[in-house]
Length: 68
Image (tube, rainbow, N blue to C red; front, side, top):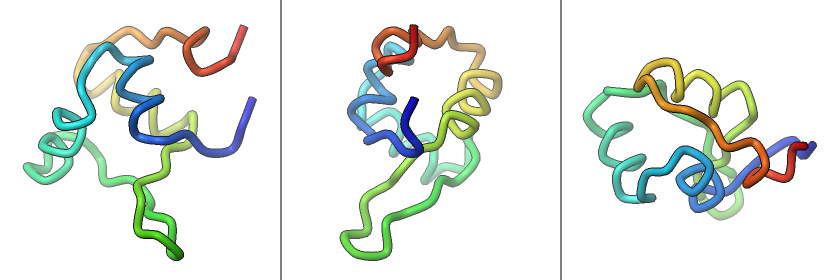
């Protein structure tokens, strides 16, 4: 298990698009996630992913995150 996941990995594991995740965050529909201070990319922890899944009633495909 890794410490951080990319937006595309999270979107894939949740079954939504990267754009959807971004829009939800901008509209305040999901909890804001951390950004990498070097490149300003969003980085998600497993806790972030699980929180989003709960907030939006989604199922996480842990295998797509490399968690078996």
